[in-house]
Image 1 (tube, one colour):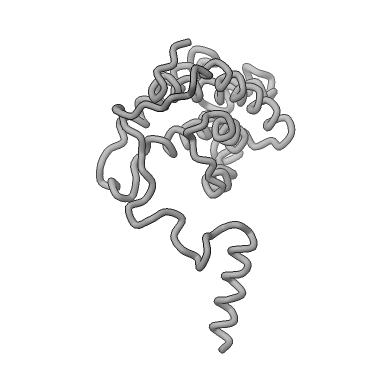
Image 2 (image 1 turned 180 degrees about the horizontal axis):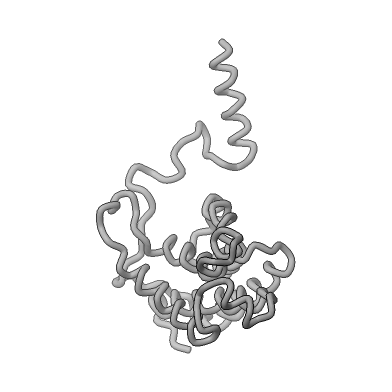
Length: 192
């Protein structure tokens, strides 16, 4: 009886926190989520420019209000690009990736990392294709990387923070806009 009560309490806590579906069913079905491919096209109704602008504005707003560059860049992309999943667990997982992925500032910029999570959630490798490669996701994050290098000389947190005098909201807004642009170019045919 005690074990069952403990399970039911855990189930209630999990459901109450919005962490699971009814009966603690898997987040996705047995096949898992479907990753977009090079062949997929999504109609954004000619709103590409507005979507990119929204990503930029939300990146700045979220970073100023909430901090955590990895989470705020991801959230800005999730909340602006209509085909990026608004996955709460992914946002939660992005939490420790701010400040150079370890708060040491010695690794990739958290805003850059958040972009990678957003891109991967759209076209990354799935469990169903766990042994396969994700060349499209790698290609798209490389495009964002190149924009970072062009603007800041690097994707490393310490380098970027020195260039922007530790004012990261502009970095987050640029990152979110760049990722939105890359995703829209690939999947909606948007050209700036």
